[in-house]
Image 1 (cartoon, rainbow, N blue to C red):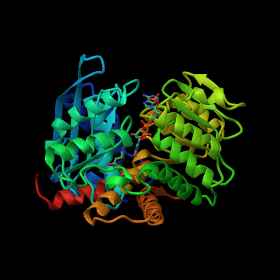
Image 2: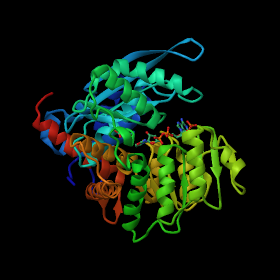
Image 3: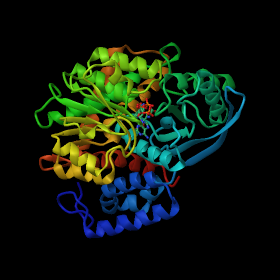
Image 4: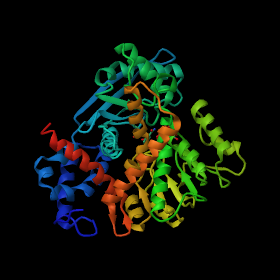
Length: 462
Ligand code: NDP
Ligand code: 2IT
C-alpha cells in the first residue's frame, strides 16, 4: 500500500486526505441532491481510494474517481399496467448503467416500494466494485421499480413484468446489459421478464440471469448469494484459526439470501437462531434446523406468507414485532435483508453480545457509524461487496454456460463459487491487511477499484 501525504502508516487517512475527501463529497452532494444512500456508498469508497488516487498521478489526471461516480447512462420510464379489478396503475421503472469498463453492465432488479433513483444508484455503484472483485468480466448496473409485489396476484405481477420489459428490452442484451433478481425479484419475476423479452425481440439468449433450470438457468444460482456469504465467513474465521462449527448465528431477512445462508450454516455445523422480515423478527433458541428451513421456504416462496407464522408453527420460538435480530447474543451475524438495517446501537449490541464475525449478505446493511463500531472492535467484518458477491459471480457463470450452450453440474458450479469467494478474500487481505488486522472494507474497495481504474485508463476518456 502506498504511503503519501493523504495516508498514514496504519492505513488511515491524514488531515490532507480528509480535506480532499470532504471537497469531493461536497461536490457529490451538490450534484446528486437528496440521494442519501448514494452519498453514503460513495463516501465509503472515497475514504478507501482517495489515498490511492492521490498517489497515482495517472488516476488523478484521468479523473477516474470523478468519472466512476457518474453513471454511463440512466434510464427512467413509465410502467403502466392494469390490476385485477381493471384499474390503471402506474409505477416508475429504472435501469442504471453505471460502468462498463471491464464487461457488460450486470446487476439485479429490485421491486420494492422504497426504490428511488438514489437507492438504485447506490446499488449500481456498489455493483461496479463487487463485480470487479469476482474476477469475472462484469461491468456494473442495477434496475428496478417502486412496484410492490406483496399482496399482488400472479396475474398482476405478470402484467407488471411485461410492461416493465416493454421498455427495458431495448436497453439490454447478452453483451450489453444483463439484469437479474434482487429484493422482490425471484424465479417467478425473472420468468415473466424473460418470456416478454423473448416475445418482443424474437431472440432466445442469456439476457437475464437467475433463469429457471428449464430455460437456461444455472444450478446453484438460487443458492449462490447465501452460500457465498457463508464461505466468506469461513475464510475470515480461518485467518483466526477458527471455524463455523458450533457457532450461534443471527440471520436477518427471510428471502432468497437468508434462506440459503441458513442452509449452508447448517451444513457447516453452525446454529442459526433468527430470521426476520420488514415487520419483525423470530427467535428460535433451539435453532432453525433443516426441517424448519424447508417449512420457511414453503411459507415464503410458495405461500408468500409472513415470518411471524414461524412462531405459531414451532414451539419455543418467539416473534418480536418491529424488532431486528441484533440484540440476540451470537457469535456470527448475517444481515441479509436490506440497506442500513444495522445502526450504531445494533452494532454495539452485537459486539457486546459476543459477535466475532459479520458477513453481509445484503447490500450496505450496516450504517457508517455501525461499521466504525465493528472496525473499532476489530471483529471480522466482511462488507457486502465482498461477502455477497457469490450471487453475481454465479450469474457470471450462468452467462458463460449460456454462451457455450452447456450446463455444468452442481458440484462444478459450487466449486467455482468457493474458489471465487476464496480469491475475493485473498484480494481483500492483500489491500486491507495492516499488521494482524484485516480491514475488509478498505481491502474490498481498493481491490475492486484498481482493476476498474486500470481498465478505464487503458480505454481513454470515455
Ligand atoms: P428477497 O426479496 O428474497 O427477500 C428480502 C428480505 O428482506 C425479505 O425477508 C424482506 O421482508 C426483507 N426486507 C426487504 N426490505 C426490507 C426493509 N426495508 N426492512 C426490513 N426488511 C426488509 O430479497 P433477497 O434475499 O434477494 O435480497 C436480500 C438482500 O440481499 C438485499 O439487500 C439484496 O440487495 C441483497 N443481495 C441479493 C442478491 C441475490 O442474488 N438475490 C445478491 C447480492 C445481494 P419483507 O418480505 O417484509 O419485505
Ligand atoms: O446485488 C447483487 O449482486 C444482486 N442482486 C445479484 C446481481 C446479479 O446480476 O446476479
